[in-house]
Image (cartoon, rainbow, N blue to C red; front, side, top):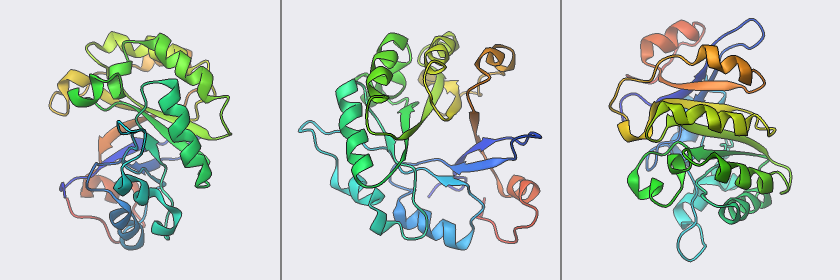
Length: 231
């Protein structure tokens, strides 16, 4: 297990107290890990499950499907996450999740790996805001479900971010979770700089930023908690 789990963090303001979300890590933050973390440590507002994606035959991998079954998450229900590159993929996964009783879902537009992006999924959609709009047009005709979006600062360039935000601003997306690197940098480059000036025109969107919360940082923002994961 990585020594420093990745968290989504929305920093404190007068109107919006700090929120901490646990990011999904494939093969690591499964139901066993999430439920154990909740029991032993807590302090996290939401846990995100690793993404669901349709296989070539249109099914979902059994292990990732079992991971979000309510009976396998007795302590804390996660937010399911999906990888979808077309409106049909999105609708299929959203309907399956809705049938389990979930009313919240996250769309992954941030996965940077070529095996995902070459199929027009994850951050591979960021250069195509028109396709994102088409998918969302259909998404919001589906059974009611609150949708948040995780995305990168761009696929090849940070200039790709704001056309996508303009699209998202036209839909009732509940939150946007930004990983401040472009996809081609994977997880190695220094995070991209502040977007605060341009973000003013998207004030209606709740924006989170991904950060690594080390033990010392957790102690500062959660001073009343006595037990923390190692870092």
